[in-house]
Length: 128
Image (cartoon, rainbow, N blue to C red):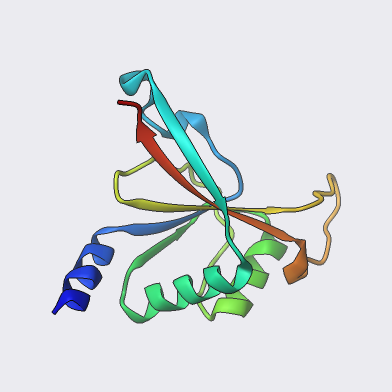
C-alpha cells in the first residue's frame, strides 16, 4: 500500500525539463528570501525517471527549444518530446531538471551526444 501512496503523490507532480533557470518563473518577489538547491544527475537516472513518468502517466513538460537536445532525449527515453518555446511558470509540485550542453556552441547546429549533456535537478524553496 505504501507504494500506491507514493505513486499517487507522484501523480500530483509534473516533471519539468528546462535549458536554464528562469528566475522570473518563480515567486521570488512574494517570498523575498528563497533558495535553490542543485544536484547533478546522471543521464541514466533521468532516463529511468522519464520512462517511469510515462508508464505511470505522470506529466512531463518540456521547455527546451534546442532541437538536437530534445531529439536525443526523446530517442533515449522513448518519451515523445518536441522543441518548445513557451515560457515556464513554477508550480509547487514541480520536479525540475535543467538540461544543457556542457560546451554550448553559439550560432550553429551541432550533433548532440549523450556525453554532451549536463543535467541538474533543482529544488526551489522559500527561506524560513
